[in-house]
Length: 229
Image (cartoon, rainbow, N blue to C red; front, side, top):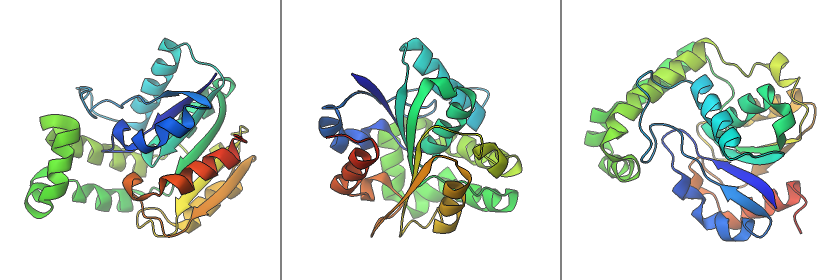
């Protein structure tokens, strides 16, 4: 059977893919790795970078001895998937990204990173703080500032610039929700235009969080792109 890797986003968890596992397991052997600092995986002492997460994906694929992999990446997971494909095109069959932010600038990354203050979140959004603690344990308070630093480094030097994307020849489907307040339609269209072998899908009435996406809608789009019958 074909291998499908489902990659969660920043501060996300592989648990978000549970509604999809049964339907997709008809077609794929499914892998749901966790990035370091997420779930029960220890946060690296050297912090977090997109390069580190790309390395972690490469190590996972090598350890599991996977070839011709299909990848779905939500948010940051989609960014990591494309970074991996740039370095290892022979290993990847195709990629779907959903709600992946591509338009990183230093100013905007600094603004986003300021939101990731664990004390402020615990005080002002206690339910979200509870969710983070449930998913990642007590290390969630270290994960947030580490993620903020990653955003700033992304803003300073985003690896997926338009001239780089133009070299990705594998099939890619860029997807974004029409009500995503973190990722614009404009940046998604721009990336779709820069990729030589891409499709674009806009999900109606869909916000950024994976748990807000309707499983039937997303499953149908996956089946369509990957010709699953």
